[in-house]
Length: 202
Image (cartoon, rainbow, N blue to C red; front, side, top):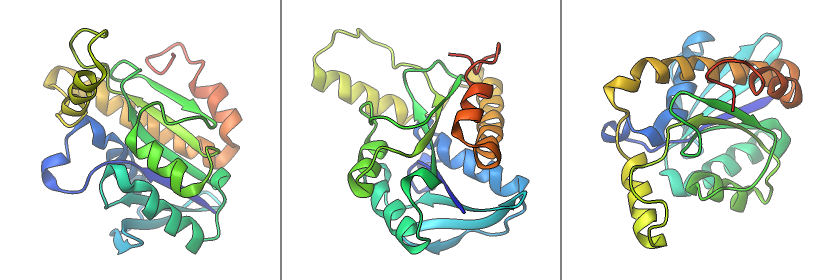
């Protein structure tokens, strides 16, 4: 069994935000695998489906980004899953809009959702699907407080219309990547998606 988590914030006003790209990938996976309606459980919206012969729980934590780890930890405990059974889809400002990269484990890189997951799971050993949203405008050498405010404002804003095609393509490829991880494991999926001569290449 796998737990595939998309990070985002609940509520209509956040739906199109850069920070909510993880939710959009989960919605695409639910559509592809005909999981039916999401149900409220463990502080999340959950749906269950089969990816081939593998049972997969799709999760959208509903307690806001910086508390995502609590919902994921509750789901992991309930389904008796290890961090290695978890795939997390999240936005990444270090990748250009539309670009994709898979990672086996690692730190949080300043991402509040990942920070919460690492704290609550007590582990960094979950797979990540990093969805590029680009860097906020402004000088990179700004004071840390100003830079943090600029990043927060940026990820809590919507993608511009000019990026819509690239973003929709990235969401589809991120769903493909989640399916590949479930079917073949993170290493094989990394070899496929991180070396493509395409926008997914990093």
